[in-house]
Image (cartoon, rainbow, N blue to C red; front, side):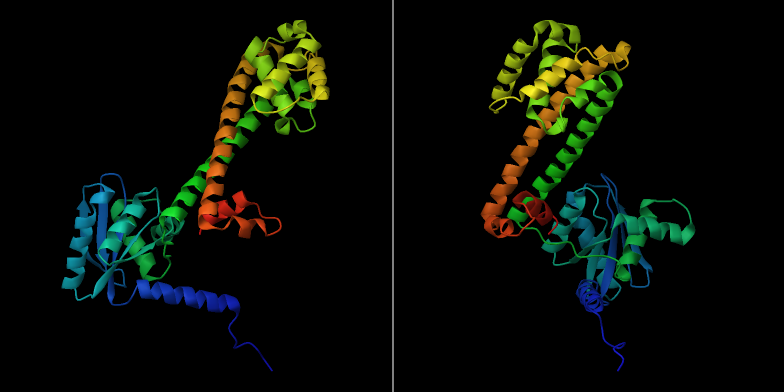
Length: 329
């Protein structure tokens, strides 16, 4: 017997999502599409056929849009609608302010993805005309088609987790960029140094030795050679202890000392490039310190939510990874 008439789990989930959206975008509600900006806010009130009932430009900041919402509610009531649904794009942080203003007035609030607005604009007239007036209408139209979503409400603790997760993501991107710069510069002017350790960017000794060579001698490798292997080991050991470590890898120090005499690389650019590497290494080290501090704060939030034991009991999931996922809750 055929099972073709049965709904799949995906169908049921989609239907449930559409039902939740229909409560927010009720047919008895007018739709208020707002194109948010810094000092100029375009507000349109439409019905579910995208007919514009009212339009007005408010020259104010996002947190002063309460008067605009009151005006939109009056225009909707005059057109025979019971209430309004406020819609905007979730760009920057202004939409959070708008969502709070809507909640204060008992108005439903939804968001439309900017990519959806962009594709809708192209499908309508094949141009890149992203004027505020047109975008506000497109936002309202997409909302009437339920091509929107209800943003997750945020309480104080989860809100803090989200902001820390955003900071962690930015720091990770910065650390990756620093590593690429260091590798690219080293491959150009001193490639032998990259072979001193199997995984140089994970080696505390390798990083400490670089900071010694660049910080003490300004990238002048001849000065470091005159220092001698024994004294280089001593200086690197002090650098590692200062950074909170215990002892260096003597093998890596010896490999790096041997690399000092390697002639490979663009020698004419070596000193300037190594000075630049030194500055990037310092930025990299500072971002790693900031990352550790941010992850500690995220652990503290998980403790506050009493979730640390739960997430760490799941194989393959770290507390920080769970906290980062939790920011998208």
